[in-house]
Image 1 (cartoon, one colour):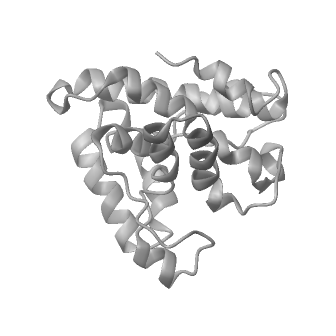
Image 2 (cartoon, rainbow, N blue to C red):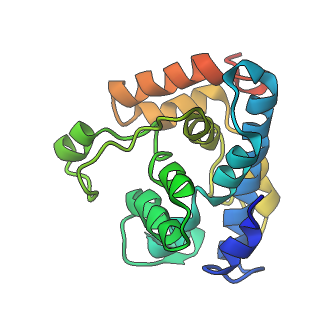
Length: 194
């Protein structure tokens, strides 16, 4: 198993607000992803890789301009997936890099990059493997925005299914349908609609 904290520590300073936000969010995503793996043995997902992917999926946020989460880089926030992929490829982690670039929204198609004129290289960024799908889906239930200063534990509180769906659906029908397809395949009781 990879030393995910050691990898994060190559790019982040531990015990800073940026580190705490990233780690708390990633741990919440990893816990939900682990529940999905456990409750869906028929998917034959690699539990260790899902954990590693969940812990590293947002490593690229440090290179983005997102002051609300203590990130002061140059890239637009939507680029955090490809930024993280580049970082992990320098460490010879191509599979983990693909998790980074395929988790944003419910995935982003090449047509959406083109049509919406997103600041991304034109490519398909939709999750393909079951592990990529699990991390992408689990990520939608957790925010990186603090509800109150220095209350990092609040990042572990999951969004409702309706809020998660709304956060994806605001980008159009296609992302909404992709999220619903992931939900149909991966839902666990705490993510089921009430």
